[in-house]
Structures are given as structure tokens and as C-alpha cells.
Length: 70
Image: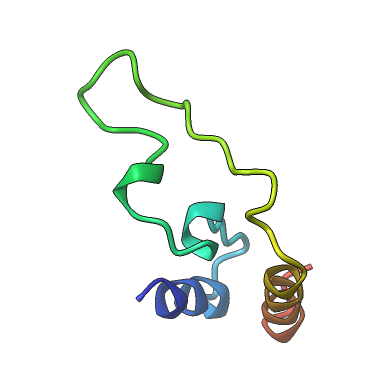
């Protein structure tokens, strides 16, 4: 599902498309940055050092170039 939403955002006519790394990494609720109406545990997610692979970087670059978003 994430890949479809990422593609839809990239192909939109909007000037800017913001794709959270959690979506590229296909992570779930455990990687939420913010839970609305809560205090204390927001904005603590950090990407693990080895999470971004060369394959993922190539895929992001391919999408960025394909949809002319650079």
C-alpha cells in the first residue's frame, strides 16, 4: 500500500511531495512520529543506522527522476 501512496504523491501536480522515511521503509505504527492529542512520546522515532539500503536509495532516486522531482 505504501508504494502506491508514494507513487500517487510523486505523480501529483503539487509543487512539493513529502514522503516520510517510515513509508519508504514500509514501517507500521511502531514508527509513528506523532500521535495526535497525546503528550510526551511524540517526535522520538529515529531511523536505524542500517535501515536505508543502497537498493532503497536507488529506488528513491529512480522515482525522483521519473517524476521529475529534483
